[in-house]
Length: 221
Ligand SMILES: C[S@@+](CC[C@H](N)C(=O)[O-])C[C@H]1O[C@@H](n2cnc3c(N)ncnc32)[C@H](O)[C@@H]1O
Image (cartoon, rainbow, N blue to C red):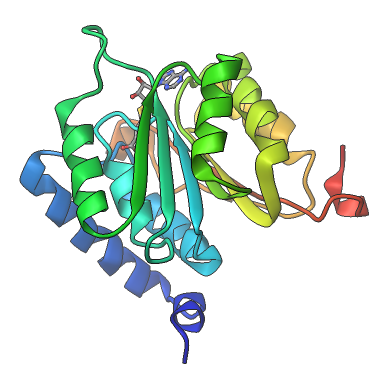
């Protein structure tokens, strides 16, 4: 059985265990993911099914979700993080530690510090991936127009069968409004929503769309 077939058969229990194990490792350098574990593990199983060789994250903060999703990528995959710098103009040292740990694990990792809405910066991130995007995690500017802008910039670079993940689509947020518009353009979509405001402090939620083959009726726009 190949590694890819093994990944396809990942159960939700296995995905949860993999995510928890991954989070306990990055806690050593004080990194965590800004995600609900129950949602992240469902999204992790989706990504593991793709087994991406080129993974892009828009908005990495401390690097936690990048670190977790990397474990669902192919060995040696190209991982690019495009994330806004902090107030002092540099990326958080914990994201730097995450990138170093990923590089030690054999990934081709690059952190690009900048604004995803800047055309040249986004072009640099896509160039750094070296080919069509297999999976993108959109978790940067959560405003309505911000999410739509990231989607418009990155969607044409995602290969047929690839996946786009949008974080924070479950509450009454700009990201949720954008998600409603984005999902309407795709034939295959899923919404992972396990958060409850009273229990988790936030709704969060992850929207998933699968890129159709261009020219099929599934494209929808
Ligand atoms: C919610 S945090 C990301 C959390 C991270 N994905 C995780 O789960 O561990 C959002 C990040 O996006 C960054 N960000 C906000 N607007 C951005 C933009 N226009 N371009 C790139 N990054 C942006 C913020 O600086 C922050 O690091």
